[in-house]
Image (tube, rainbow, N blue to C red; front, side, top):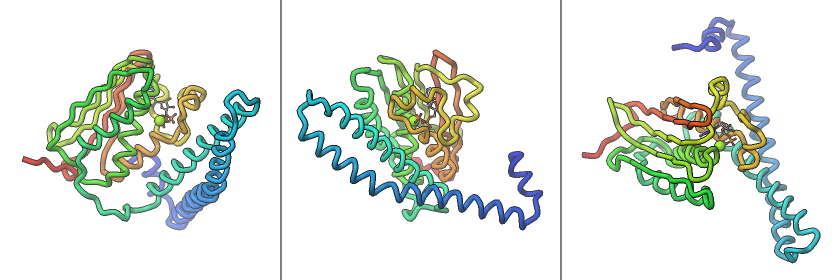
Length: 255
Ligand SMILES: Nc1ncnc2c1ncn2[C@@H]1O[C@H](COP(=O)(O)OP(=O)(O)O)[C@@H](O)[C@H]1O
Ligand SMILES: [Mg+2]
């Protein structure tokens, strides 16, 4: 079904549509260029700050200052990498790597280990139930970004010792990736906007956990490129379930 915006664009004269597409390209190029230009200076600053920190005793009066500077440059580097990834996902029609069968169960077991590290002292109970025979035609790197963003969010927005269930299964000709948490939840009024760039329900909380507000925007674009759909079901203070649904043409089941 067409969205209102798509229907509106179709009703416009060609010259205006071309102008809108041109402006959109300028916007995308601008973001990509700024991000690219910031990359090198940030790497240099981060490197020097790390060197300085390694030379300072922990109780030196400047240690805390340099530590904060180093953490902030790391945050900026993360932001720049995320912006570059997002602009690649938006502008490249297809990745240079041809879609290949990706062993999702294996990929998920790697991401779960990373999630356990992220959880650390919070000791979330993370479980994985994945169909080993179910593979997806796609780009492994992009799928890693998609699945890890959703799983890491579950860790970040679930209080210590909460439960996180990850599932990869097949039903009625479709493949389902499901992440269910017992976390803080998302109020209904925010749900339509959470995949927008930089949209965060609680900015301070997101920042404190190292978030850039770009994770779900990246997830949405990877899904579009894999003909997938996202559905989110949530209750405040109870938990959230993210479901990614992939169509038959993307799935392969080993007998
Ligand atoms: N599992 C979750 N539980 C509660 N809130 C979530 C969850 N996943 C995402 N959110 C909300 O959606 C926002 C956008 O997510 P994301 O794009 O990944 O950005 P961030 O970098 O802030 O994690 C988050 O800031 C958070 O408010
Ligand atoms: Mg996130």
